[in-house]
Length: 339
Image (cartoon, rainbow, N blue to C red; front, top):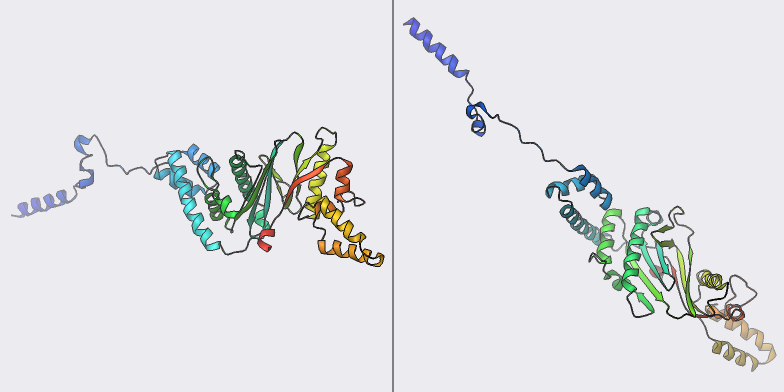
């Protein structure tokens, strides 16, 4: 009897020490050929991660997430990131849209026969000096320049709504591109206005002048797009073969930026004023001339003192060189917001 109890006790101890594999591992224990293993975590292709980060500028964590979601398919990951950035950007743009933007940059691009000026505004001077912001201005300028070079018009002004709908070669609108950068930079941004001008006459030439004070002096140009706080475009007619023609064009553009004329003015205006003055009594002539100059506000380019040589009016200076101003445009950062 005691022996039977002892055998029963030993049998229970032996059976309790035997480990039965769980159901999840049963399939891997057949004939002892396989063992139960923990599933390895998915890996990201390091080259794709580095390339995606460099191309988009997004955080490594976002780039890694995009690649994991799309099994390291670079193109699909890139599209997903762009879509997410657009959502985030538009959401942030909506929150920031009422914040004022008085800072920014004018981007200028030129060829021998065409030119573009584009103003992009931001909230602070700090962002206006930021390389990422300047890269945005350069990108938008290239998109506009490419789009407008097919225009049949020699002068194309673009307002904010018109500018927002301009489309890149990848079918992104400027509004979408700006919205994404709002999400990235964290300030309210706006592509405010642009002007495109071109010439096709052998007797005409475009010139531009850019005032760069207050900008990041280490980054005044990116891929052919130059930056300034003030910029002017001038269309001049004359003998383009004369040795100093290019210099003369630059000097008139500089005058436009510095003196801020509102109109060109006309010879007929000068003749009319001369006749009116000559019909007045001598004692009233000087008063009339002063009043005319004061009310005019020096706003007519031809009758302003020439910036480079104040002894002449711009008209006199041009006539001595057989030149004439056909058109001009001046941009100053923030003037649209303050008007």
